[in-house]
Length: 208
Image (tube, rainbow, N blue to C red; front, side, top):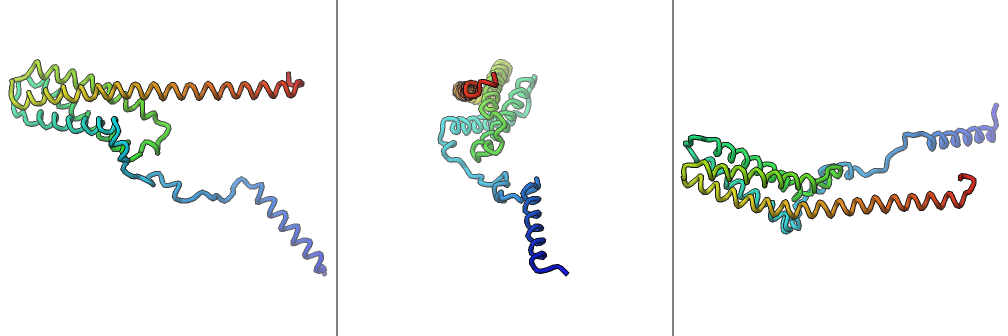
């Protein structure tokens, strides 16, 4: 029969063994809060963005694109219809894409997907919209039947072209500033790494 001391010794060894295996196990219980895993948590309307230059320009672009699309949709008969169809496609596409980007930036959804370069995405959208709105407005101005709807669509088309052009200019400046800051940060990180490596070589000459 085992004595009480032997039993306590075995219990202590078993407890130590359990603690060691628990510490070395790769499957540790997580302490991550549940709310941090919610990707859509914390969605709110960013009024500061709406009051900024980019927010105001986005709202104006969406509004003018919608008005131009409505104007071109009121045309019942056309011959030829190439200019009308081209303007209809451009205005509808710009309204949808710019509207989606406005919602993404306004609701801070772009912070949930940080691996996407949103500044470059906005720059591509504004530059492409500027080009195609200018071309479609120019084609519609040259090929039309002088109806009120066509003239209004041309006017709003050139107006939204100017707004997109201003947005493109500001987006290029923002993208260049972001690229410059990122390049400077990478250069500084490289210099720090080189300095630390050189210091380690000097401290341990046997590595040379």
